[in-house]
Length: 188
Image 1 (tube, rainbow, N blue to C red):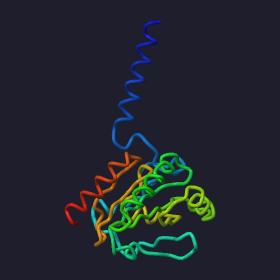
Image 2 (image 1 turned 180 degrees about the vertical axis):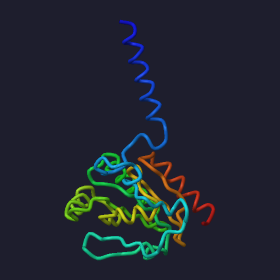
Image 3 (image 1 turned 90 degrees about the vertical axis):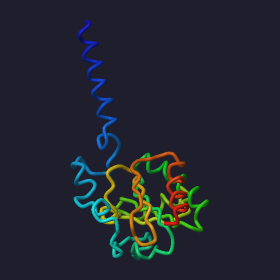
Image 4 (image 1 turned 135 degrees about the horizontal axis):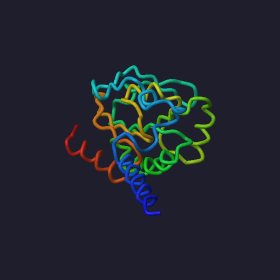
């Protein structure tokens, strides 16, 4: 019946439009079906106050803690991810390569949203030969950076704690390189 193919085309068109609209496609993290605002956190300081609070606590895999301000000697490249998330897993080799290229000028840091068991994150680090520091239970840190509405979400912080940029979702490696080179060229 001709009307059935017309309905199929309309449904397909609406689906494509929804995927292309910002904030409607991709993964928001493990939010258990909660709405986007709750998954990303209700506060987005990076959007209103570009300076991240220096007292943001990060949990290391060995049980100790660190603060964002502990990393103020270089630019800070922070990626919020989850071990179970496919695009997050694909981001790891990109970060490993970037860390190898830019480690003199940039500190690379992974913040896993996994919160139940640090052993899962430790095994993920070892299994993926990660060459940068990884924290876990990072929801509060992600919220302080501006939220992670889409995984992975990457932030580049300047030495003074200002969030220079937020890159949502997995991108080509060149996009991350270009952002870092822009900061180097502008001497920010």
